[in-house]
Image (cartoon, rainbow, N blue to C red; front, top):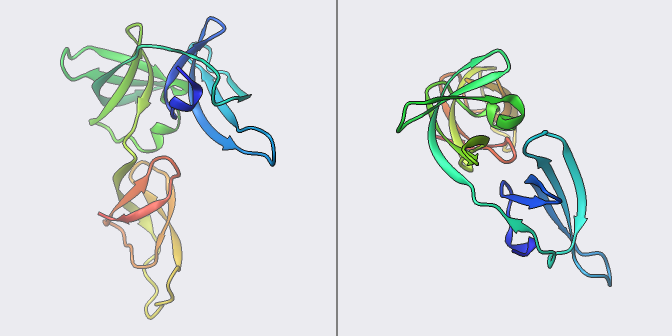
Length: 184
């Protein structure tokens, strides 16, 4: 499969090892051909590699399975997931969960990417709805558009929200950028 057919989160095999695409940026410098700046993470070891690659490079696509699981709890450095069909509990490391931990609530359904029967990473939706647990009260009479304030959400992440958002409100957050999208 050509590199240009891959997207963020996909897994491929290169030099006998499994890699997951973390970030892909297309660069088209002046009169030269296009190049992708690819940031990839080794699935087994967790190290990150940045490499320039041509859109026409052939990569070995790997069959992965996506399973519906439920995030139960955190135990030390492990995140315990439960398969919703077999009720089997699988631990995942912080490296495997990655930034998804910022958006996962306890007892919430998530999709886990499996490779050879082992959990590799968590596949989040593009946006999640979280409740505001702490923020400053709205300043009365402050109607200037674009005014934002920090708000702590139920998963302990902090995002910038509009001035009219209060404690207890539910907000939609983009899981790719960590930015506020709208009230929910």
